[in-house]
Amino acid sequence: MDSEPTGVHLAETTPFLGVPFSVKEGVRVQGLHQSYGLTARADYVAPSDSDMTRALRQAGAIPLCVSNVSELGLWWDSSNYVYGTSCNPYDTTRSPGGSSGGEAALQAACGIPISIGTDTGGSIRTPAAFCGLFGHKATPGLMCLRGADIVDPPASYVSQLQVAGPMSRNVEDLVPILRVLMGSKADKLRLDQEVYLTQLKFFYVDESIGSNLVSPVAPEVRQALFRVIDFLEDNFGVQDILGTNGVLLCPAHPTTAPYHFQSYSKPFNFIYSGIFNALGFPATTVPLGLNSENLPLSIQVVAGPFNDRLTLAVANALERPFGGWIPPFRDTSNLFY
Image 1 (cartoon, rainbow, N blue to C red):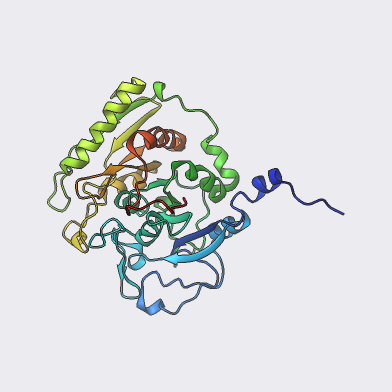
Image 2 (image 1 turned 60 degrees about the vertical axis):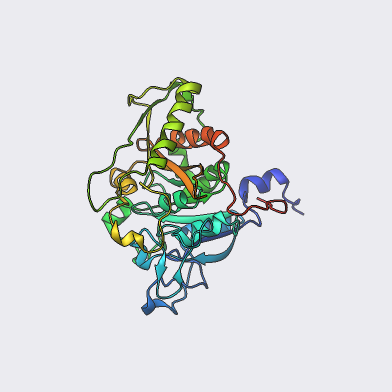
C-alpha cells in the first residue's frame, strides 16, 4: 500500500492546497460566467478552464469566484452593463482601476487570498496602484493564455502584449504564484538567483507626458517617488544611471484613484503602464502608504526582459520601510491575512 503523501511532498506538488483564488471575469473558470462585461454574453458560462485556472487547481487552489472587469477589458476602469461599477475599498466614490479592478478591490478588502488578472496595457498594475497592492506584470511569453480572453487563441499582436499575473497584499506571495502560472518556464527568470541591491543601478522618471489627454504627475505621487529614491540611495548606494542590471522607477499611474468615470476625460493615462507592454518589460507595482485623503500611493519598478527578479527584489526591499499594504478599514483586531 502506498504511504500517504508527506508534508514536504504536498508542499512541492500542491503548494496552494485548499487556498481559494479568484480571477478576473474574462478568464475562463469552468461552470462560472465569462461575459467579459458584454450584455450579449451575460448568460455565457465557461465550458472549460483556462490554462491558468487549471494550473492553479493542480497546485491545490480552489476557484471561488470571478470578478468584475471593464467591457472586453478595454478600459482602465471596471464598469459594465452586466455587473455595474466596481468601487475602491479605500473610498467607494473612487475607481479601483481596470480592467482587473474587481479583482484588486476584492484583494484589497481581504476578500480572497490569491488574485489573478491579465495585463495588456496596465490592467494589473493600475488596479494594484489604486488599491494599494503589489502587482506584477511578467516578461511576456512565459505563460499559456488559452482561455484568458473571449478570443481564443488571442490575436498575435495581443499575445505579444498580454500577460497574466498576481495581485497581492504581501510581496512574498508573488513569486510562488508566478511559478505555478509559468510552470517550467519560470526557470528562465532565475527567480532563485540572489539579487544584490547594492549592485543595481536605478534611474527614474518623474516628469509628465505633456499631453492634454494625459494627467500630469500629481505632486504627492512625485514626492512618494523621491522618498523611494532617497531610501535606496541611503541604504544601497544606488546610482541614477541605467546599466545592464538597471531598474526604472516611475509612476504606475500619474494620479491616485480618481472618482468614478473621470477616466473618460484622460483616456491615455494608461500610457505610464502600457508602454512597458509594448516593450515587453516586466514591471511590479509597489504600494507606498496612503496620502492625506487615505488613498494608496504607489510606484512602478521596471526592468529589462527576463529580469523579473530585479523588480521583485526591489519590491521586497520597499515593503517594510514604506508600509506595504495598509488595510482600508481601521479595526484590524480580528483580521487574518
